[in-house]
Length: 111
Length: 114
Image (cartoon, rainbow over all chains, first blue to last red; front, top):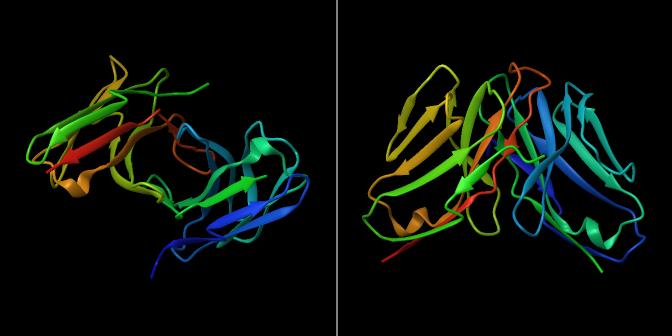
C-alpha cells in the first residue's frame, strides 16, 4: 500500500528517557514533516525536510532532533523526555502544491 | 500564533442533514485545505482550494473561499454516520514549494446521529 507509515503507534516511557519515532513514505514525495497534536487537538508543525535537507525548524526544544537518512525517511529523536512532551506526533509528506498525506500518528505518553 | 479559527467547535446533526463548518484565517494565503480526522486516527486530505478559486466540489463536499473576508466554509451534504469526525482547515501562506507548511485551525467536531 502507498502510504506514510510511522512506528511505534503507542509509546509510554518515563521522564528523562530518550526515544525515537520512525517515519517512512513510499509515495515518492520530496518533502516530509513532523507535526505535534496536543491534548486540545491543536496541530502544529515542528520540522520540514526536503530531499534530506532541513527546511523548516519551528520553535522546538533542541531535545527534539529530526534525522532524514534519505528522502523517504524522516525520524524524530527526543532526548530527556518531559511530561509536557506527551502528545500525538504525526509524520506527513507532500509533493509540490498538493495535499499532504499523514501517517496514523504516534501517541507518546511520558509518565 | 495559530492561523485559523473554526466555527462551530462542535456540531451535532442527524443523518441526511447538511453540515456547514466555517474557517477564518489571519494572513494572505496561497491555498487552503480541509482535512478529516477520525477519532484516534491520522488526518485525511479532503480538498484543496487555491487563493484564486472561489468554490470547489468533490462528491458530497463543497468548499468556498472568500479571500476578502479571509474565510472558507466546508459543506457536507446528505451527511452519513460515517462522516462523524473532526474537520480541520489548514492554510499554506507562501508560494508553494520546499518551504511551505500547513497551519491548522482549531477544528470542528462533527457528530452525525442516526
